[in-house]
Amino acid sequence: MDRRSLIKHAGIAGVLATGAAPAVFAQASIRWRLASSFPKSLDTIYGGAEVFARAVKTMTNGRFDISVHAGGELMPAFGVVDAVQGGSVEMAHTVPYYFYGKSPAFALGSAIPFGFNSRQMSAWMQHGNGRKLMNEFYGGFNMVSFAGGNTGTQMGGWYLREIKSPSDFKGMKMRLGGGLVGDVMAKLGAIPQSIPGGEIYQALQKGTIDAAEWVGPYDDQKLGFHKVAPYYYYPGWWEGGPEVDFFINRKAFDGLSADYKLIVEAAAALAHSDMLAKYDALNPTALKQLVAAKTKVLPFSQAVMDASFKASMDVFAENDAKSPEWKKIYGDMRNFQRDQILWFRFAEARYDTFMSAQKI
Image 1 (cartoon, rainbow, N blue to C red):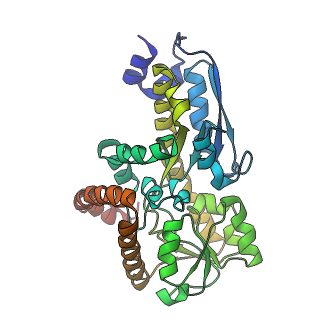
Image 2: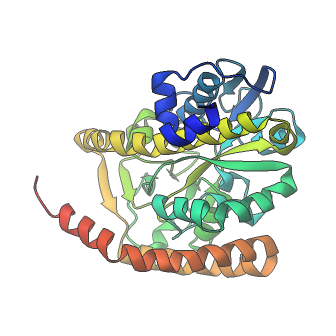
Image 3: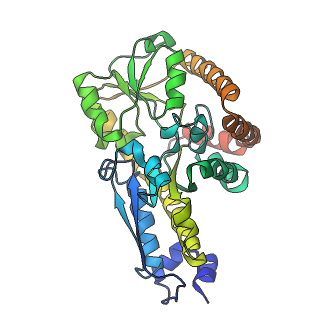
């Protein structure tokens, strides 16, 4: 059985666990560099790139070696798309919405306010038009993409003061993960700030910002936000299921043999599923520890959610008017989401609602 057939029938986990017989590859040994947008301290989101690189190296018997570099090591955390596009590195591991300033359509490859949850995002990408449409768009930046993780629905951030109504956002300097949610929050009166993950704690501590969102309990606890901001709100309505992506330079990817291309795809799939499972496994304990440390965990009010939804819809309409790429992809995404919401209203929602009220 050749390596490609083995992956298909045994699965990536089986290949890595059993140590498949040495294969003969059509391509000579190669070395790539991967630039991450994340700090090395986060074994979850940064760790996804390490899972990917290890899998590629294992499946090629060490012939395809990818070195992983944390945000800021080779270039600024938000400079990785320019680096991949220009070919100074072969690939990056990042969140597409970081690059909303280049084009609003970037956000659709990851998360938009009141968008997909993680399962719905994967369904659209893998069995809808998502990956096809996004890769058509990324082609304009000399890149191809593969899913490289998901955090699940995120928390709504850390605040120095309570948020009881939409008016409480007025004048608030808030670190946000992407320009799209920044546009939405600006409509609510906030002042969006773009700060890499490794610099958020210091900004909160010094009072440079009044609030910040990152991911969820496990990562947020590691970064120490609870030590400087007492209020922790949920849900992160702007990130219902944000996809983290691998961006690969188009020329570099096209230069791979068929075997190596398939291995890259399989390793990305492993990293993608592993990240979400890791977050789901680690977040509960971290949340309990944060509560024990006197963190005030609070829901956004219905008034805040309603105002945020309206502001989001206004921004989406503005993007429809100014970006043909956004309009094309967004329309397809929302059409797919309508059916997803219809389905999830039944079995999933009823089951989750019932189980959340039980004592086990």
